[in-house]
Length: 120
Image (tube, rainbow, N blue to C red; front, top):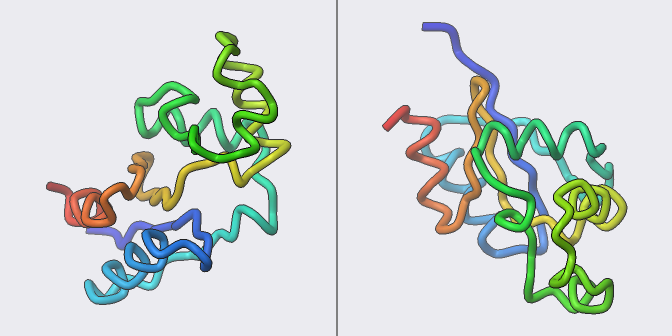
């Protein structure tokens, strides 16, 4: 079986993100670390991750984030506008997100990343 690349959308300041990265490393996996707060993901990258997770935009948004409330996103029903908000303000994206082989998972709880990489 080919060794598929594993990518983690990572925020080093987030304990859940650090925990997910540690779990991967304990499995002998050195994922590509994508610091999405430094290199903002494009709307297309966000759409692709949503498709891989099988989620709607709000399902990967930090709805308790102060910025979410400030931008009035609770009342937005347009998925495209939510994606635009995440592309413009990546801290609205819940983390960590782990991608492998055309699939992705939101690592909440962090143990969910193991289900993806182990294929369970």
